[in-house]
Length: 172
Image (cartoon, rainbow, N blue to C red; front, side, top):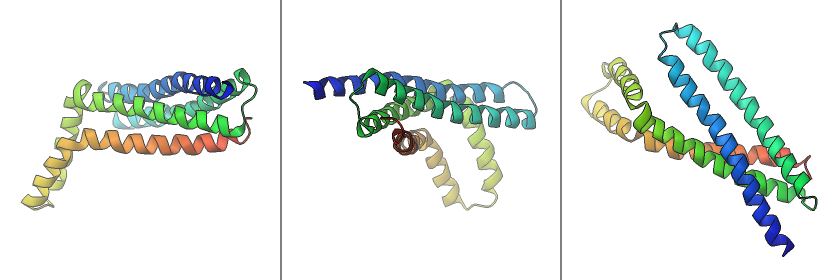
């Protein structure tokens, strides 16, 4: 019975943490996309984007640590292994939320912005490519949102799991 309650608490904590981390990371996407449409100079946009990325990166690490510590304080019988499991579950849920919001952004919300960027890229490189390469590039661009979803999901889950492993060492 105790194990069942711990598992329930683990997934409930991971759900809240995953939602917070996923939305925090997704806010970065929307802020940088909005920033790129302000008409600000490219250097200004780049500087603010880098600053926002640093804030997101450090903020997500701090949030993960806070949620893992909170889980261990609410459940005093947890071990480092349980805290790690909670961190991995958080990584999975936050990666799914973040990747889903990225897919929605690329497919619906800012689809025209991404399409314009792809067209510029294609124009820049098409002089150096044959017709086969250009055709393949166009097909690749059509599936890029799905590729970004899967790639981002895998990367964020792997990174979050590694972070959970590091953080759980000092959180009983």
